[in-house]
Length: 182
Image (cartoon, rainbow, N blue to C red):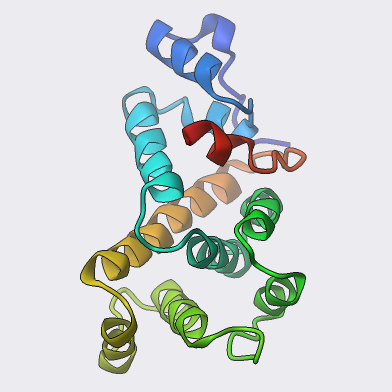
């Protein structure tokens, strides 16, 4: 049970109510974030940019989000993003490997291993080591590297909100949120 009540759209300030009404899925996470009225829309805009406008491939993004959800741990993130990861081409074998923490297995290619290793390092330390950074530089553009770091940070923040407020896990929304952005 959530530690705070969810924002009720009927009694929410107009801007918050309008934003909640426009969302394709009425997920508890959104109704919890809505308490932060001045941050609500900007956070959704950043989440939208991460989910739909990054140069970093959607599959790499989703594998990263799953890793953050697993290691945080934030079961809500994991539950919501497994179907999205599948829709981006992540295999059941890859999803199971992330769940087990087996990030260097043969089911991942070089780019996937590099992203997962960097994300795992960022979950432990605020700064990527020189070797990890050099690997990313060899395989990715500067834009993709920064997007990866921002994705890890954003989903770490969401994981902490989910866990600190004990947001109730919704049934998976599938790709509804991502599809609506496009």
